[in-house]
Image (cartoon, rainbow, N blue to C red):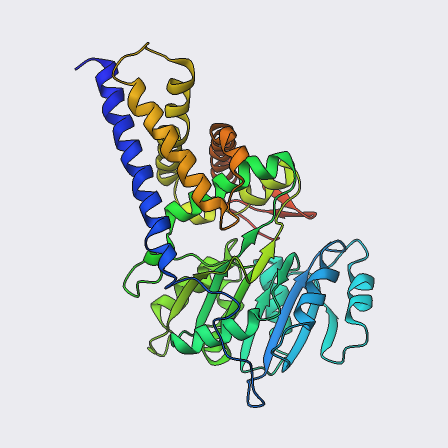
Length: 395
């Protein structure tokens, strides 16, 4: 068989994969089983449980005010809100105090520097959780914006599904060129690695949690050792998910659920190419786990996200057998991007730059792996290095 026919076979497989992913978007995801919306819970009553909201903040002067405003506006009123200043070098604390507006539910505390072997975020949350008394703990990133019904819906979903820990994926707010080019591709790579339906299978080893929003039953959090048990993990959210799915040391059966909640939460993660690169480079390898998986991920990106576009755009090898499946794969990619953009994961005009975003994403995965193996200097995030496999790892 000549090269053209081999390429045609590979590209038809790529097309089939994209068609399958479209079917998932319009099938499993659209059925709403793992999707949440503002109307999915009754109004909270006087017997609503106390929820402790913990918001770690390091250099978040642009984000902490709007975040705190949306937390204070929740229709679930039984809250205690703790903002943990994690060594900020900007006006984070001053902005948080103004945003609190004298609300007695809000406390602002300072976290000590992370001890050796601890990641900064885990250390800050571990310190703060010891001083709160909620039946439920909500760990929330400072760049998050919540719908007023978000917490009520999250609590209702956790109780309905008898979950001890839940997390969800909100809407990505993207404004700059590089955000709109790269972020949808990175979101799609995560969805490939750990689709919601598979993560929610109790017997599946697939784990994905979003540290931007994690709601924990306090009893379950204590049972697995909380952030103290994942102190050295770069991706502490995924590590917590794994511990819950494996059950507590006491042998109790624990449940974890992941949801889509684009109408309940919005987040703008990064604002520039540099911040996107470093933001994912610091923890991508923690999810991939091994160099072999990095190689596999890069090969998949090449086949699904780059090769079809190159052949379709250039007419490489003429009008041979490889060109029709390349065009079909590109068309399927665009349909998938159009479908997911309705959930906020993509912006359709920028879908034409899909292969560029994919190439950058592949570069991020490779860079993260090299850093994780200690072959490159650690990635730095907000002034703190994230080490490789040897030595202290702090962030």
